[in-house]
Image (cartoon, rainbow, N blue to C red; front, side, top):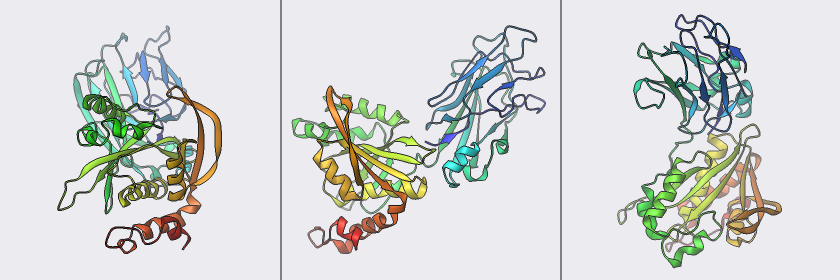
Length: 384
């Protein structure tokens, strides 16, 4: 869920860099794995590799933007040799890391990543030959030239395709507290959640969401499977913690979305709170965990909440949680065939200390009487 550079340097079998870290490079004549004809990056931007019709035939030029959006579980770069005149290639090493601009944009947060490279004997990625993983900390890398070199083992030979994956520990983080556990959404969560969303009595849950109410357990599971595989937004399931009287179960979901890393802005949205979660300390705790995660773990400056201007409960929730109303974008979009004016709310890193104090004071056991009713409101706790 962070920005990393595409893999921009590869070594030939002798260990000599064949491509520089600059956005445009030329493969050296002595590289044994030439003839790239297809490549693309995960995320939003493309890397194009061109094989010129000239001699020597093993010279290729690539070009593309030097920063790509790397989504959870998506390849940074995929190289396919299906149309190449070169039968196979051998990989010795590659470079990985983040750009200096990326480094500055996340304020030197020490975020760890795992880079996994997979080599295949076919261009369809069905014959895995080798797989190897490497870890690094973003804060250790200051410039493009300081990208880390990864030497792969001897198994990366006779390849037709290489995929490089980046997994961010932050994306898959599990957030645990007293009432809830917030984890990456999985399709199987639909099985326990469906009874809380089915039927006409629950159609109001979807009144302002982009999803229609589910028509069956199968359709709901299919919908959640799509959300689980989404990399923007990134969906999280809200699991009600188990007690001696009841088992833990998923009771809702939310997502982090529209990340603007250079400006360190992110939004929370696509929030579904079922009846088991609504108006409970667990719901407040889930929102607290996500906000704390956004500011303290990911280092964002601005946290946004947007909703349909007609969605009064969402507007009240935003202000109760400590977001500040900033205005309404008129005719902002058409949602499910209807006009939507969008109300914008935000929370800033400079405000987080006070907002956090309010959350923690409100969630403290001493704030609830024997019947579970609050003694002081969340707003009062913030202003105390």
